[in-house]
Image 1 (spheres, rainbow, N blue to C red):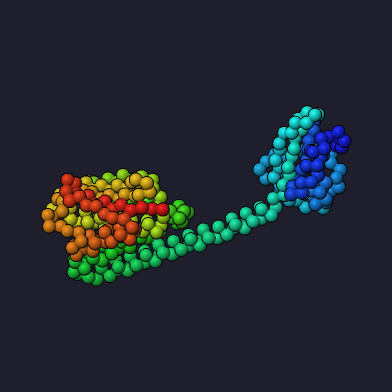
Image 2 (cartoon, helix red, strand yellow):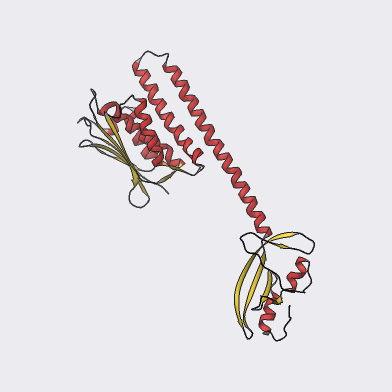
Amino acid sequence: MDADDNQAPHLRHFVQTISSCGICLLKPDGRIAQWDAGAGRRYGYRAEPRSQPMGAGRNLFALRKDGSEFRVEIGLNPIETDQGTMVLSAIVDISDRKQKEERITAALKENEILFAEAHNRVKNSLQVVHSLLDLQSGRIADPVAIEMLRESQNRIRSMALIHQRPYEAKDFAHLDFRNFLQTMVPTLMSSHSIDPRRIVPKIRAEEVPLPISAAVPCGLVINELVSNVLRHAFPENRGGEVEVDFGRGSGSEVVLSVSDNGIGLPHSFNLPSTSTLGMQLPSLLADQLGGEMSIRPANPIRFSPRFTIG
């Protein structure tokens, strides 16, 4: 390196007084014109700069005189001088920052494992309860009691599926509700022994990820509304369609909709006074989500819960 005394004094002062990082001023031919002597002392070298090759890449390391390596970031900026364009190179020791990032990454990984295990255990526990109810129903002759147990099993299966999806996708903050619906509706039809050629399911769902806190009650709402259609809308082997829509409304509003072209609701139907759990639950769950549910009683019948997510 040539230590040129004709360099602009303000550049020499700038280079020599910066202590937070190593500073080099490079001539057009690549030789070092000046460097930060304080950085040299910090890294164990005397201020005897000479031409050095510079590696390229995202993970860069510097070498102290004692042989130890440390991570660096290098910034290059052109500087116009009387001798032509020089390059101001800033070499920053990022060892401490990288160590902190690695600790944070390790902590996040540990939390991810804990969340995965929690969802997996909840799913497995729900599946055990489902199996126990299945065993119990085999010992019951009353068809009404058997139907009540089956509906409880469907609710449990829906909750288990909600916990299974984040475990598989490794996303424990949100649920891909569209994917959930595409699995859940056929499962419900199979549970009710419905021929999909007689009652045709149609699912129109947007890709709206739901937080788990909202996904569980939403899943139960769909479970109840679809189950009601399969039980009551098409008596005497009538055929028709059941449609499930899911998407965004205005702003951060989310709209669920279950509709069918079956026989419709009786003229005397009044949701607040109904005594069946299958009709009460959707309204109660919509309230839990801070939303409301609208009903169109015919042509076609439609239940539409609406709520807002943050």
